[in-house]
Length: 162
Image 1 (cartoon, rainbow, N blue to C red):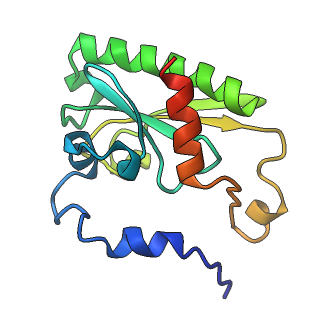
Image 2 (image 1 turned 135 degrees about the vertical axis):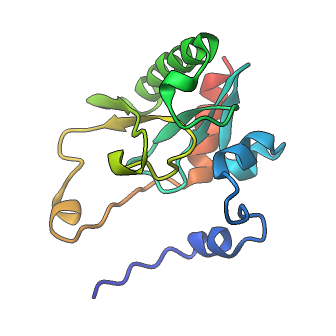
Image 3 (image 1 turned 90 degrees about the vertical axis):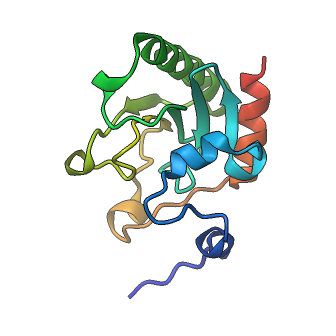
């Protein structure tokens, strides 16, 4: 068995601020006024941008509506329009900060589609590089994310506030 130590996760895993069973983590983040602690990098009128706590790559973020809804077709047109504008803005930010070779953009709607939070739609936006699925990922089934979330948060917040 492989062991990878990530002590920064312990505080999150044992935090009293975790949502109660049945409570939506995205609704909890939306209602919070602690953007740095929750890793919220931008707040729009109908959606916010937050870093993924367990990123696939540096800069992995999500655009999430404030309103709790499980399906994209439940979202008001204004929410969807802003979601796409913020996705576009986030893509621009990622290119500026990380110079990726590409960007993945997508949604997993419903548990069967792979949604980690199935009851609240969210758009993933993450930079990708050639060979970012290196031997660690392929052989050891392990990802290496070299930048701390607090650093990513500050860099992205500064870039998105422009």
